[in-house]
Amino acid sequence: MVSMKLKKTPRSNRISSAFLIIILFTGIAFAGKQLGQESPDSAGKNLKWSTSYQDSLEQAKTKEQPVLIKFEAAWCVWCEKMEKDVFTDTEVMKELEKFVCVKIDVDKQDNIARAYKIKSLPRTIVINTHNEIVGDWLGFHEAAAFSKLLRDVDEYTHTQTGTTSAPTIQEQTDTSVESQNIPQIDPNNTDDLIGLLGYKNTGVNSRVIGFLVKAGSEILPGVVPALESKYLGTRIAAWKVVRELTGDKYKFDPWASTSERVQAAKIIKEKLQSTEK
Image 1 (cartoon, rainbow, N blue to C red):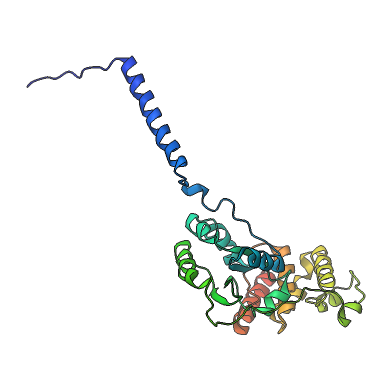
Image 2 (image 1 turned 30 degrees about the vertical axis):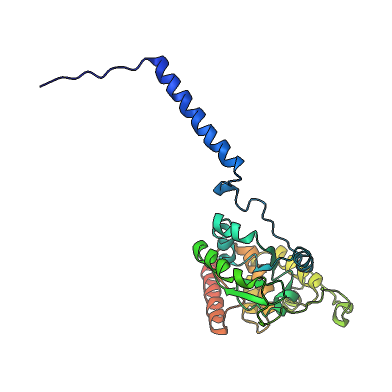
């Protein structure tokens, strides 16, 4: 058998080779920047979400850009998942740079949610430069699928299509007759507070929710039945109270069908009863 000895490379030569490799890669990176190449991590880094619907429309009109609206809520689990897994995706962010992006909290801006007839979340709507709705997507979509939706709608964002126009929305004000007759609120009267859940005056509604949350978990048996109310505002307000007091312990969707809401409320009631025992 022939034995072979590996020839050792002098230390000085190894250092020189490593130094040359570093210089080579540095040169390539610099050349890439010089050519205007963008690293994947930098795509969409300047993307900003507005929370003002009217300002976004005006900005889009000035820049001649389409508008992308995402409807969300603090209690919407799938909205949160899209926020973390989809709207941070490199390819999705790159596509979103073509739009003026606005996010609408359906609880805080319910006038906008009503105008667009939002009944379930998450919901994403695209308005082209002719004020037409050219994209309307319901539910959660994986990043790759959502990126494709954005690419598919791209050809319609600057072309008049004859589709439904975006609704005209008036800013929320407190000049209505109902807002001028604000009810007296007794923070110690739980029954009255529960009866005011979902009150159309946002100031009253927020105070009621705050008082009920402050009252603690003992008021939950009285609040949970309000989850089955036929009024969306009442269900949303009741769910805010339940969520504030229990965290992510229970699942409920104020926008779900009647049968689904009744079943979810029933499960919450049963779990509360078992906890009391």
